[in-house]
Image 1 (cartoon, one colour):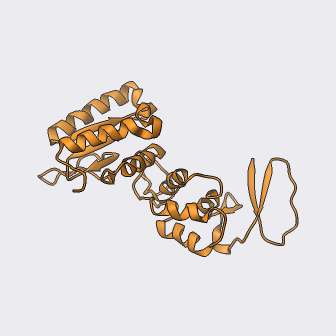
Image 2 (image 1 turned 120 degrees about the vertical axis):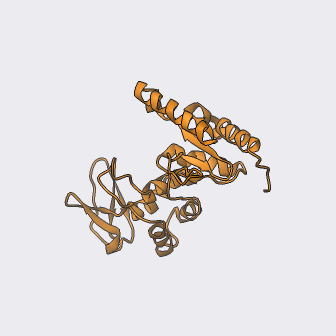
Image 3 (image 1 turned 135 degrees about the vertical axis):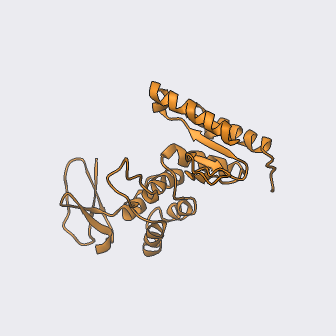
Length: 222
């Protein structure tokens, strides 16, 4: 199914598998992809607010604003900035889904590298735990830069790693073991989360993170 925006007053379009939306579209909300006009990432994100949940919008927004990794991607700048997303909200007051977009923008963060990382962060914060940092490198006492945990608490020396399906591959298992050894050598605690921990609103994942925080000295209200 394709979604097409037609400017207000444009001729009717009737095509199979095409859903037509009539709405205000500004010139700077249109870009070209292989010569085809499409909406910009920030405008597309706002339009998605009509059909996605708040959490899904946060995942989409995190993906828009994340800093790409040039060694793996053919770009070195984010698709847009949090300011770009906020500009869409401010410009289109009264648009369907605008309230959800407003809730989501407050929860979007730069640094998440996957949907599961975003959802895990949301679950942690909603459970009343401190908000973790995202993909921040561990710096040891000598100033040496080490690996970047998916989520972390530098104050408590806790790194949280989300293990996706690729972590079952033999080569990845070897790398994961080496990473765990580095955590131990640095005096950090590693919390490993997998898909099974994310069921039922990520209760098991939150419990693992809470246990690590308490053991490291964190207490609610601190």
